[in-house]
Length: 392
View (cartoon, rainbow, N blue to C red):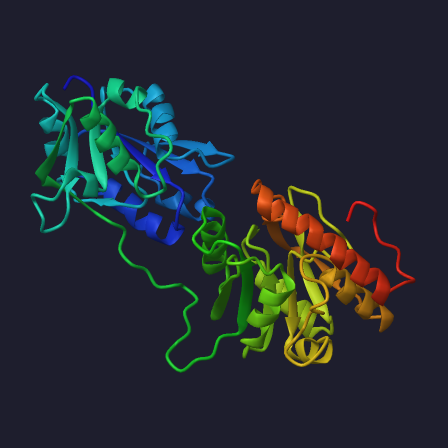
């Protein structure tokens, strides 16, 4: 080849695993000349990886998630070489893998060369974690609807449907990201400090994975996550939150919507506010609208508030409010004792502005709208002197 191949590294997942991927790219054999384009596809915690980037690599950063195929087309359009090697997620290439993958495309009958799995030289191409293709084939790809983690398999199927040959290269090995342990994992016998309760209608969704990844990578104390999937049938917000809080045995708890992404150092300021006497503490929301009196999509409380401000034993929020107004009810009760929630400005989160409530599912949307009307009637009956917004 007259020009070096381009290694396209697409990141949208776990930054702890991504570091291993970058180290593997940096360790590729010097005999295999190549360029590297790294794509930050709206990844949570990517800034922590900047020191790991291979020397002289180029970086593309997306504000919103585009997926591997769209990102690969963008990268190849900027690449110098005629061959691109696409890495799936945080896959790790063996140091000598690049040469055999590129050499396989010297055969014009081969459209794509798939890296083999470790200790499986004859693994099926759709199982691969790295795929070498010619520039023109990358630019013509249409496999944009594949789920994360299946994009390379979709590319193989697309090429095969056109009568093109995809072949596994035994000497070109790529492995999935190695399992990791959380940096904040408690030592054996050590107790967690905080429990994060996350209610959701779909625990397997990309939104929830981003939320959980953000919590795991940015909570630097021993913690546990209680994920409540309440989508069959939907139970609103109060019931799953109350169920999650009943499981809390730690000194502190956090309630978090599934479209919240904590930012670095988000937890210590909240804990400090609670230790200083706040009944409820909530972070500043970056980049989007937020409330200064109580942004209830993410808030922290300690054991004394969890017990002392509960509506009833085992029911922190009032079950009369299924989808909405449970936070307004709590705010009203806290104001009545002159201990309202405290905004902690040096704790930061990002928020998707209630993506679940704004669902495109017409049936779910109708149920939510109807339930909110019932919730409002229940709130007005409980707090007749409190004025509520007409658009609530």
